Length: 475
Image (cartoon, rainbow, N blue to C red; front, side, top):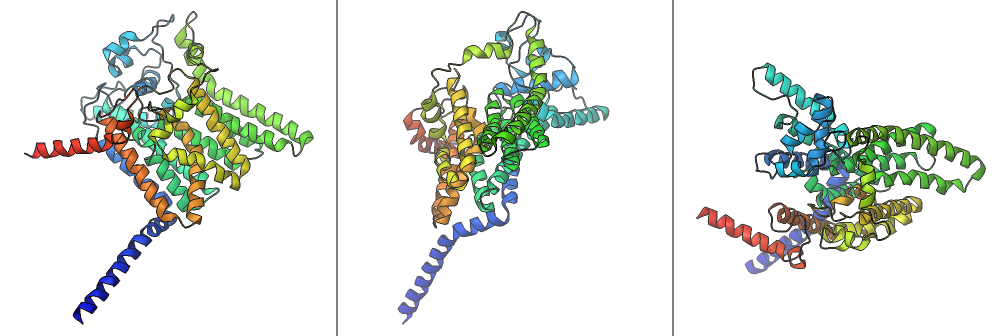
């Protein structure tokens, strides 16, 4: 009798446990449906905490800014504090001496800077916050240099970069919500953040342009979705302002400006006579507005180059092989291939098929935008991105891919595969986290190609080695 009762209680416990497992995905999904923005805000706090916690760690350049980020950042102190375009002092403080020696001095007698000013424009409020704090502390008797270089300047500025990354994620979520539920949009945004290179560039290296690039492209795509298919004249101005900012951050992202133009042409066939005049007016306003926003960048490059030195744009022409773009390596190479490093994006690309069922024109145009980015990056001589965590060159494509990912998630959940979605999401995030550790801790090359073993079993070798080191440190 006792045995029978124990068996009955054990069976009930097993049923309860199975129900808990079966309902776990539903509970997570319910939370995302009820509190999507809170979930995304929690990830933002996590990124900020990781960044702040790692500030004391030693860095190769001795600065929080590093690699390309130092060139983006250098615009701030030279323009805001020195009111000139002489980067001599900034480069001496921000860059290693061996790098400075290799920099080109133009015929104008200035160091060149091929990078855009868009990040500096976006970072300006945060940099000024650091400057006001530095001025206040100096007035209080603290010995703080007002040179725009110290941590008191860099920390607020890079927190601003992380904030723009978060704003880009919110815009991605908003774009997904135009077609899908809150939970689906939040899930897609979370995977885009945690299962791609974006998490690295919003924690470990926020001085790079990628967080700002994500924000600028996400803003442009969201505005396009809001105004399509036939924007008013005022809306074309807004799109032009957003498009000009997008190009200021990273000129190669300007291919996304084609989306509203192609979309308008798509609708032109409905009313050719009246539509042509409206198209021409809108395109003119759009182009002129975007061009006006981009003029300061052209003026700066011209001033830096001097009368007899090619500008950054002229020099860049020789760095592209338009007739032989490396599309397949960009996607599948062990040398930072987008889909090998971040397999969730392969599913996102497949998701465009399901987005096509929901909105043909949006799906088609997003695929066109993604393909144009692939072509530009594949044609560039440095398509692998140098020191790069995964496919960093295609971060600006993440807002488009997020809509494909949301479409796939929506299709799967409608067919009762919620548990599969949750399991795969966890695996993709874990895969990316292990890659993050491999890259940051030096277990794989930062600039070269990795091996297939490092791609797969190397992750477990790293965990074993870290466990062994932890045990040795306790002995």
